[in-house]
Structures are given as structure tokens and as C-alpha cells.
Amino acid sequence: MSSRGAGLAVASVALALTATGCTSTAGSDASTAAASSRAAFAGEALPAAEYLPGLEAVLRVPATAGPTPLVVLVPGGGWQSADPTGLVPLAARLTSWGAVTSTITYSTTSTGATFPTPADDVACAVRWSAAQAAANGHPPSEIVVLGHSAGGHLASLVALSDGRFGGTCPSPAVAIDGLVGLAGVYSVRTAADALEPLFASAPDQDPDTWADGDPTWWAQQPGAATRPRVLLVHGSADDVVPMSQTTGFERVLRDSGTDVTVEVVPDATHATIYEADVVGGRIEQWLGTLRP
Image 1: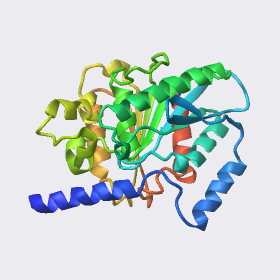
Image 2 (image 1 turned 60 degrees about the horizontal axis):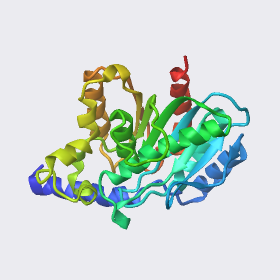
Image 3 (image 1 turned 30 degrees about the vertical axis):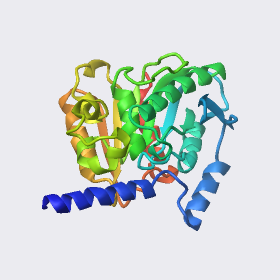
């Protein structure tokens, strides 16, 4: 492909990423699936609360108290939006399975936020969620960060960077045990057009900042022995984020000695890969392997 053609392809991905954030999928099938997930929900959704001023999270806790896995769900939206609505059915399913879940939002480029603010927000949301889970009778036995698309990028940064992000978060730091990426963007230079608003620069203008915000760079750093276990999931029919984002990230993680599992979901698209009925069972099975 010519450089002009490659540039047009990346620009198309940038537009598509924005259009396919984790909002509810239109149509009766999606509405029926969401209603079914809500009907089967076993647990309690706590009132929305701010983990930082103006940024909310909703915690869902199982019916039985005690040490429990915590899963923090980070929505996509092309770094321009962060609507967690579409992740609610998945959160409800995972809570019914036995995990505390937290659906969050974070600062975006549409409100003027640039890197590292969104990553700092996600890290703070993880810390806050862990503290709130413990305060509500569910001390985390494991902490997992799950992200879709742009949320997969931010979740990966937080999970792999050993406490680099969090800013001035008032909640205490925590160790992250697992990362789940759903059609995430892990190599920032291969999606540069989509990410330039986040970094407020081109890659060659500020290479250190782009490296700091690149999950692939962090995966190559020392420390695999204490790195979280990783589950990467991608839909075979995803025409928004290329499969190479997942397979390339897998190779880097494996080369660094990280425990990584990859699953390709037949016929799943970028807009369906995070649906509860599509990916919930796979995540539950993987979560079960984290337990001693």
C-alpha cells in the first residue's frame, strides 16, 4: 500500500473508532440481550459516585460478601468519548458470576484532555474501585482491568506500567493482577492519526511521550515476572481495529515472558465484541484461572 493509501486507511480507523464506542447497539436484538442480562443480574448496583471531580463510576457487587475478584471496565470511544453504557450488560453478567465490577468514565479529548490525563483517570478509577469494593464487604482477591478499543489502550497502559499512572489520585495504590483487552489499540504509532489529538503531537515531534503512552513499549520493559496475566480478544469480523493490533501485542508480550491468552471470536465485530453473550463466558473462564 502506498503511504497515501496507508494514511487514508488510518484516518478511516480514527473515524470508525469514534463512531463505535461502548454505547448501546441499536436494534431489537441488542435491546433484548440487554434486558435479558438485567433480568439475570444477581447482585446490587450501588449509586453512581465520583472517583474524581466530575468523573463517575458505578460499582456492582455480588449478593454474597467476602473476598471477590474486581473487574474495572473501561469503555472505548476513540479517546473522544467514554460512555460506559454498552459495557453495563457485561458488568452485570460478571457480577452475577461472582465478581465486583466497576463501569467508569474518564476525561477525553472532546473536553480538552490530553495524555497522560485519561490514563491517570483510569488508574485512579481502579484504585477507587478497589477501596470501595473493600468498604462494601468485598475486598478484592484479584484486580483486573478490562478495556474495549481505546479503553483497551488505556487499560493496558495502567496494567503494564507498574504504577506509572494515577497522578494525584487520593485513593491508595493497588497491584493489578489481570488485563483483558477487547479489540484494543496497543501499538500507538500504527494508529497515529487517531491518537495525535490525545498526544497533542505527531510521533516524531515528541517520541518520549508517545513511548510513554504505548502499551507495546511498556510490554518490552523488564518485569514480566510480576506483570499481570493478559487475555486478548478480537472479533474475526472487526473492520475497525485490525487483528494485527492484537497479534502483534501478543508477540511482544510472549517475547517478554508475559502469560498471555488470545481468543478470536468468529463473526464478532468491533461493535459486538464487548457484548455479554459474545465474550462473557470467555472472560469468566479466564477469571477462574486467576484464582489460587
